[in-house]
Amino acid sequence: MRTAAEIVLTAGEEKTLTRLSRSNTSSVRLARRAWIVLLASQGKDNRQIAGELGIGRIQVGRWRERYAKEGMAAIERDLPRGGRKPTVDAARIVHLTTQTAPPDATHWSTRTLAAVAGVSATSVRRIWRAHGLKPHLIETFKVSRDPKFVEKLEDVVGLYLHPPEHALVLCCDEKSQVQALDRTQPGLPLKRGRAATMTHDISVTAPPRCLLH
Image 1 (cartoon, rainbow, N blue to C red):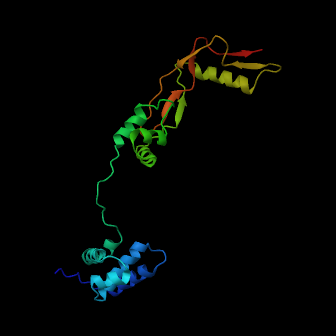
Image 2 (cartoon, rainbow, N blue to C red; image 1 turned 45 degrees about the vertical axis):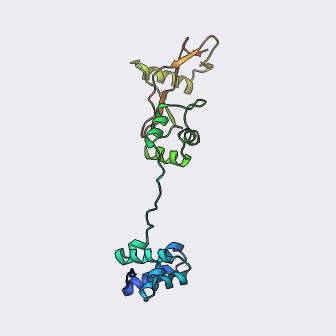
Image 3 (cartoon, rainbow, N blue to C red; image 1 turned 90 degrees about the vertical axis):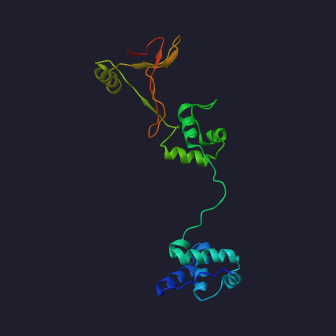
């Protein structure tokens, strides 16, 4: 017959366990474990402790033995649970996020990607956070090779801010017979720590004009 582990407490251990067993802030499980150890230190066997606490004898024996071997740290953490661990293919989630797009949208949401990958939206959100992915964000940029770009920019902005007296400034960004073809510069794809990027302007069949009347 297997003998239950003997529990001998110091004055400090007994004080700590008594506080945990009576605390309103301790979890129910931790308070119960503290009671198991306290009753065991009084010389009671597992069956008696189980009867007093209304729990199973095997449960009593497990936590009694753990305390005897590892002390307070042993009862403050849960035992590892058995069974098969759920598998979430993080690499596939990252690939789908950065290399594909949903059929009817410009980027994935946690719900749409979760439905395709067969996981929970929480899992998708956790993987995005771990890999620094934010598919809902797009940063715009403008790259110009014109050596006089800054000079021209200042002229245009200055015209808006300080137009000549009695002048009407009109900006034409669209007109008939003008078709948007594509972005003027290729964007960068979504990756870890960086949102997808695309230039703020587009190439057209005829350039926009700013008119001064």
